[in-house]
Image (cartoon, rainbow, N blue to C red):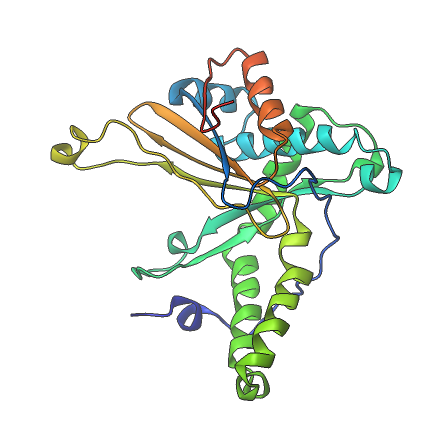
Length: 265
C-alpha cells in the first residue's frame, strides 16, 4: 500500500515551533465514559450563514469554535491563561493537491487562531482571521514543507537505529512539544458526503466523531449528509462549556439546532 507522504514530500522543511495555546481544563470524566453532544441543523442554513460572513462552511465553523474557546479562556482567573493564544487544529486532505489514491491516512493540518493579549475579538473579525490564515497556510507549498519535516524525521538513520523502548517515549514527548499543546481544540470537517443512489435510500443519517486528545479534552467533528449537518463534540471532562457556547452562538444567529447527548442525567 502506497506511502503518499514519502512519495510526494520534497526536501524543503519547515519549523514545527509554535506558541503554546490555551488549554481547556475541567473535571475529569469517568475513564470508561466519553461525553458526546451532537448538534443537527440544516446544511442550507449553514451554507447561507457562512456566505453572509464571506467564508466557507469550514472557515465559519472554525471561527465559531475559536470564539467558543476564547470566551471560555476569558473567564480564567489568571491573566497568563487569559492571554494565551486560542488556536484550533483544522485537518487538510492532501489528496486534493496530489494524485494519491491511497487508502492510508494522507492529511496535514493548519492551526488558525487569535491572540487575546492584543485585545477583544468578535466573530466577524475572527472569521476574517481564519479565512486569511487558512488561505496562507493551506497551500501546496506550505503543506509540503510541513509534510517533508515529518518524513525527514522518519528517514533519519540515527533515529531509525534507536531501540523502540527509547524511541517511543521520545516520540511521544516530541508530539506533546510540537502537537497537542499548540492548539486548544480540533475541528475536522468531512464536508458534504454523497452516497450512490441504491445505498442512499438505506442510510437515514451519518455522524463523524473524534476521540478526545491526551492534552486537549474537547474535540469537534462534522459532516453534511442528505441536507443535514451533524456537528459532534466529544470530551473527557464533565463541563460542557465549549459546545454550549458553540451552539448558543449558532442559535443567536437564527439557525435552528437540535441538540442530542449521550448523558442520561
